[in-house]
Amino acid sequence: SDYSQEPPRHPSLQINSKVPFNAEPPRSALASSYVTPVDLFYKRNHGPIPLVDDIDRYCVDICGLIRTPKKLYMRDVRMLPKYNVTATLQCAGNRRTAMSKTRKVRGVGWDVSAIGNAVWGGAKLADVLELIGIPKLTCSTQSGGKHVEFVSIDKCKEENGGPYKASIPLSQATNPEADVLLAYEMNEEHNVSVCFSNTGKCLVIMLKPLNRDHGYPLRVIVPGVIGARSVKWLDSINIIAEECQGFFMQKDYKMFPPSVDWDNINWSTRRPQMDFPVQFALLIRHMPGALRQYKGSRTYSEPCALDSTASVICSLEDVQSIKPGKVTISGYAVSGGGRGIERVDISIDGGKTWLEASRSQKTGVPYIADHVSSDKWAWVLFEVTVDIPCSTEIVAKAVDSAANVQPENVQDIWNLRGILNTSWHRVQVRAGH
Ligand code: MTE
Ligand code: MO
Image (cartoon, rainbow, N blue to C red; front, top):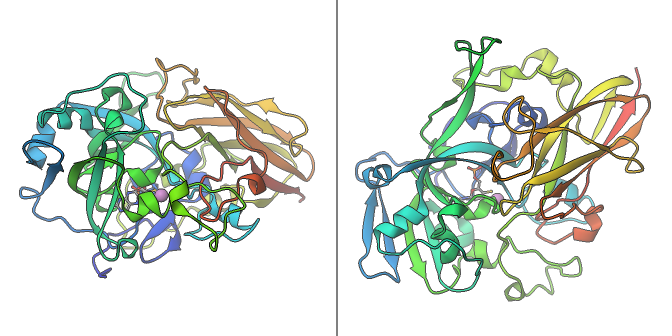
């Protein structure tokens, strides 16, 4: 396969695999803004990045169990009502590296940053399907039945050189409230120094066409579901009788118990993972607001060194030395399926005692766990300043709106593919001078 036409990438990304390109931002970059800058958003690929250069001729074939197949051009997609949906995308393999420490798992290693939050702009899949005569559905939780399959342009070795593909239930695809999008924009927040507010600054959303890494010109976004179902570089949509039979639905991204290993695995005994469970990770920093230099777009013609202060104060990694005293702990919490975050608990004594941290979504606005005022598909960030007098273990766990709690130990949820590591996030700190 041909990796000679890869797009430029931000130099501070941590590369977990070069070809295909898999990379995540440093921990500290995530906590510094509610909407993750596109350049620093994790990139998860299974093959070379496709190059679509004739946008006028680009179209998505809609076929399968429908009366009349349709070619959907970009102008058709843009003619439909446009929605901006704030949704967190998370790879099922997020935090896989930590799971491998218990017992080795197979797959690309990820730290805690295979996750990002974006404002996705595009048409609702329910509107697209209505164009071809499939009516909208508003209240169904049914998981059987027909599926909508998304087939990509990219080629990958897992499909023996064929395209990446995945599917979701038709009942979800036709439900406008599920907010499944065909997205052509991935928007960013920017601090703009005009405006009315008394600080003289305001946040605006910048419209940006999807870039090549994230699926240009058109991708699927399935909010609340593991990233693997949000197919990039869409080539066709098939209405099919049952779930997609591709590799990533049938032979990957399934959750097995710790007793299953590569010599006794029977893939057909499990269903493809869809919603992601409640997740919470720590991104600790000593000095709030010091990470601005991650924001904004850049040109990469010359390497852009990180500000020297940033590299010192940034994130607390798994084991970190700090000066005893006040430490600002921040991080993200998110749950799948549109379940909000009810509570985040922090412990600075290894889990003996807990304190509740305050949360926010839009910058400066306290987060209240209801579906009216909150972005229900999006993460919440939190920040708390604590006094750490001695070496200890900082622990985080979240509770979602269905009262699901993260599992305490990674050993209990170990699985051979290393997916869904949602165990309590722990960071060892060594206090010293
Ligand atoms: N779509 C295509 N066509 N090819 C891919 O390799 N990777 C999937 C999904 N969609 C993938 C894809 C996986 S596993 C994830 S986690 C997300 O895209 C990552 O999206 P991102 O790179 O925009 O962050
Ligand atoms: Mo993924």
